[in-house]
Length: 207
Image (cartoon, rainbow, N blue to C red):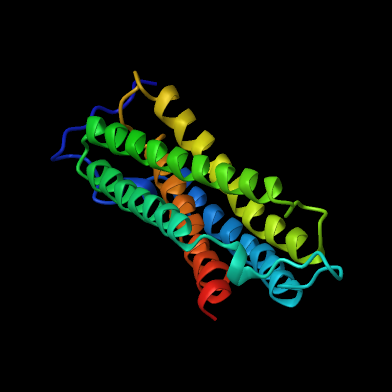
C-alpha cells in the first residue's frame, strides 16, 4: 500500500491523533503516566519520612549536604529541554520534519547535560561518605532522585531512537504519534523534577 503524500496544507491539524493507532498511543501514554505518578508518590513519601535520619555519629543534614546552585542549573537545563520539545511539536503540527529533528536533538543534548550533572552530584555525595547504604536518609534520596534519573535515561534513549530511525523516513501519520508520546513523557519527567527540586533541594536547604 502506497504511503500517503502530505504537504503543509494537507497535513492534519492534530497528526498525533489522526489515526486509530495514534489515538491508542495518546491514551496509552496517559495511562502509563498515571501509573508512574503512583510510583513517584511512593518514593516522595518515603523520602519525606526518612529525611535527615541516620545512625548516630553519621548524620548528614539536607541543609549542609545539598548544593542549591548545582540543582538550579540542572533544573534550568531540564526546563529548557521541555521548551525545545514544545518547539519540536510545533514543527510537527506544521509538517516541518527538519524542525522536529533539530529541536528533538537539542532536547537530547540538554537532557544529556542534566544527566551528566546528576552523575557528578551522585559521585560527589558518595565521595564524601553519603552513599546509598550509609543511612535511611541516603537510601531514600538516591532512590527518589535515581528513579527520576532512570526515567531521564529512558526518555533520552526513546527520543534518540526516534531521531535515528526516522531520519530518512520523514514525517508521517505513523511516526507523528510516537514523537508526540515521547514529548508528553518528557514533559512528565520535567514536572517530576520540579517537585524534586522543590521538595528535596529547596525545602532541604531553606526549609
